[in-house]
Length: 73
Image (cartoon, rainbow, N blue to C red):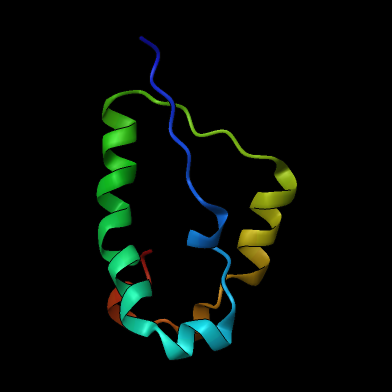
């Protein structure tokens, strides 16, 4: 059986007002996401995305809203 991973783009791109109202939910995502990525790496499951999505993530991720302990996310 071939494994596949599906990651919701809203894990990276989100509405700032929703973030402000539900901060703890977003921090929960940030705490588990590195573990998920490591498991994908160990199992050699490729992550495929369009360049447009990568560009959107890099340009619109709310870096300024993230506390220092989550900056590596």
